[in-house]
Image: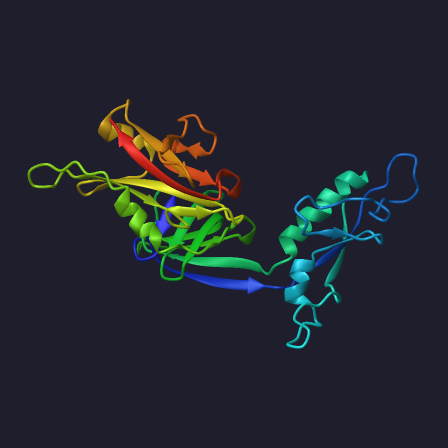
Amino acid sequence: MYLRVDTDLNKIVTTSDIADLCTAIAGTGGTPDGSNDPITLKGYHWIDPNGRYVLGDDGVLRDPVALRTWSRLLSNSNPDPKDAHITRNKTYEATSQATLVQSVLSDLEKFNHPAVNYEVDIAKLPDNVNIGDTVYLVDEDEQLFLSARVLELTYSYSNESGTATLGDYLIETSQIDPQYRALAQELAKQNKGKDGTDAVVLNVSSVNGNMFKNTGISTILTVSISVGDSILDTAEKMHEVFGADAYLQWQVKNAGELEFKDVSLTDTRLSDGGFLFAVSAADVNNKSTFKCELYY
């Protein structure tokens, strides 16, 4: 479900909380069978495959990247502090160090930045949105893209307004590249009648425009099809209008390639019949261009 400010939403208000923030965690696990003491990560050898997190001999897992932002020693004269971590002591049920380090890592990834909530003022609330659903929201003016689970939902039927509270732990934010407008125009496929009222226009919205550089940023490409005054944003709606044989064909062209190549219709990155295309850095060879076409 995709909602946009000035279309479906009035505004998105951001609040943050650093009460649980930390840059390091000392984890204690459960007590294994045959032992009298709970396990820790002291003496355990583990190397982060991504090179960000560091496990010390003292059993504390640290995030040097977050430290550069949150260390109390940070100053103009010390822009890259190496000490003064915000360390939390946490207890887990894991009874092996291999499992414990993954539990600690998961928490550190969750708490190494402020907890953020987004209060969403809804102008037009779809009838099929429920608590627990995942929704996607776009605020072009603030260059904000959200993917979040609905934690709380209130709706006034008397004035047809609603408010949703979204949880931070499922939210992804990124800048919306102004080039995505050009992408939508480039990928528009039109089939106009005599007066233009039955025009078919395919639009693709993207977090990062039509060119993706391999910088570790993931994104979601979304498709909407305009048919006259109607908007088709699901495979079900597309089939109702164009028939059961209608389908979306995605194509990709990587840097150095002369032609676009089809993306398989059964590709696991596609969902809802191709109306959603999840693209990660692993899918991009230096620089890639994506496009989509409607066949019916």
